[in-house]
Length: 320
Length: 273
Image (cartoon, rainbow over all chains, first blue to last red; front, side, top):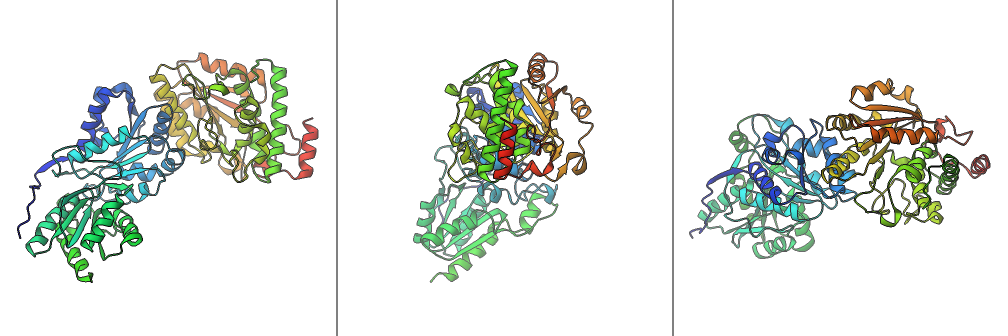
């Protein structure tokens, strides 16, 4: 049975690049957008915005806690602040501030964490954010998005601007494959079914979406039909898509470049156990990684199609 | 709402606020009297005199804003806002009780006229500076006043914010240090000394205004001096007395976070008669 996929998985831009470009574009026609930066604008790509709108670009220095507070203050007077840094710094050093002056009073701050996961590479574990989604999802009222490519990141930034309330959007450092050819079809609480299949569902976010497509192709060669869903909206979740997958395929594998016991997987498992219990398997990170090239790290730490395929077989074996 | 620059009238209002603070914390059986009493004149001279605000139009974008960064002094803020007409005076004694708008620390979800939810120390100045920058972008004339505790400025974020305020010359934000010299565990100098305080702020780029924080006329001058200073942001260091106005609470670390008993309340109210 030949798998008909339009996904050639051509190389595309990094999601951080997509964020920076889209933000600068949106800011042309929306004067409420402002940016707070903690000395990483050339890495988070908010420098595109800074070049065009210097008066709306606030350099706070290397001071993430202050940056979150400044952002909350700007939001309180009607601005739409994008507070951006490496995900590991803004979410960890700024977490108490995100809790107390953003989530608790429900302020319209948009946090974009770049250089997430282990795919940042050589800089090593102190710079690798593998807990960020767990932290972000723990905050009441936050919308948490983890897009997989250029177009979906652009759509997520537009959603963040257009939707009142706090957001966390996760971006990565390396170039990632192109999944989508349009920015249409994304919503807060949505998901995208990329391949249909009846035997097992492969769910993922970020760069594991492309790997899940590759896994589906490998499973297809074994005669296993896998559904692939991009769960770019971790919070709120697309419960309907999860329930449908559990009912219709009876087995689910969730893969993510994040701590495996604190990310999308456990959130999906909660919905599955509440609605339509079925065998589930999880592919993710279990500990801090190390320095290396992104490719070496993704290989060594199992952020590839092969572990997804193995997990799918395991889930299928447990299916009654 | 009463608005006055008359020092005698403002002193009379201050006494009334102190009575509210004592009564409401006694009724709550918990709370922070010392640091509420030390900040009375600061808040009274702002809300009843120099601050531009209107309880009937509390979301006006042109208003001045106020952030009680030392959120545990909520009773002074609640008493002042109630007397201004923002919230019911008769409910002040519901402080800290289930369902009350008067939460243990200021909470915008319960009192929308508040400019910020506070309670976790060290964060108010960053918020104030964000507001100030946004107001400046929009060409608004309003100012943001932010009261910090002296113990609170042990938090590193305060100094991150101070660097930002001076670097971006955010002159429409006025931090005020309620320098009452006592924090929860004892005297500030014994917990983590903050001196030389004026030198610290000066070296961070601030124009420092030192003032007796219980002298209304001096405070009025301080707010005007801060408004007139545009070459650098101003900080007001208000020398105050913890527990001011109640003899047995003054300079007594015990009353940082202990409610008066019924007897103590009666004694305090007699002194504040």
